[in-house]
Length: 430
Image (cartoon, rainbow, N blue to C red):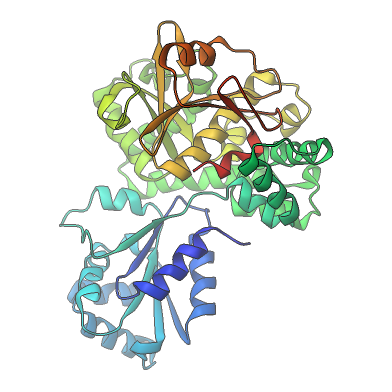
């Protein structure tokens, strides 16, 4: 399946290959598949090494971090001469060896033309807890998220619809109603599937019939996440990590969605659970949206202690919430459809902007604030076609932004200084 990050990988190959490339993302987002496909199709020679499975090669890094010695010893282990100029080496599950990560600095600084890519589960966590100095500036880091709706449309062979959505977005002109309804239908199915490649692949293999999709695959991914918590953390920390993760559906179901430690555990306190939340954020399993007390640039300077936590994938949120996909597709559960919708927009915005913020004023709340070229744009999210809301209109009256954005199931339009953008076009926002 085509992924947008492939363009960035090609830029690395063409312009900056001397710097090792590290792909960071949560488990099951497709890191190994993408890098494997990229290496096979773009280099004359390719060597794949899973450091979690190859203890013999992992042990090489414990003895030396000199690139020439590492390569020579790998050649001996693999019984294979490595042509440095034409070979790319992929170190998978590199998080199991801190020395291997440290060696990337020396691969970068070497006069030899080494081509190194790497990936692994929980690399974000590993970097945050690096015992020695992490080789900042010596590694090109790219982040991989679950497939977004644009990638989903490409996977289900809807390139023509995708082009029409882009055309309507650029011109802010309504789509033909039949195409609009088709895009909404696909968006709703994506909302419950989520962007995990395993689920989308199962959907494709079942001829796009969502009734035949094995949604237990989402449960298996969540089980793998929980297993990682046990595998890579101490027992007490893994329990706290799991409690926070499992609390997210109830956190988002509140009228006030601000994260509350008391919902994790009645006796929970920030001082005991903050490091566990940091672990989940670094793992890319969850996303954080900070409340700001000023709606001016830079928003980060005005973060408060209040925040919301979203899951990194709506399909996993559906599964963790234990709701049936039909409740969303048939509009039987408007409340939770709204929760999934807000989470969907949070994921799409985070993928684009790398940060999330929301804002409160008087008695009103704005779902998201985004910074576009120094202008702070308010964003409102609605899960249906009923867009009646006082918050956005009051915000416009009080702060007079250059424009506002409302995501909903309504068609494209621009009225009263509000850009109406269908939820299925969220990914085009830049």
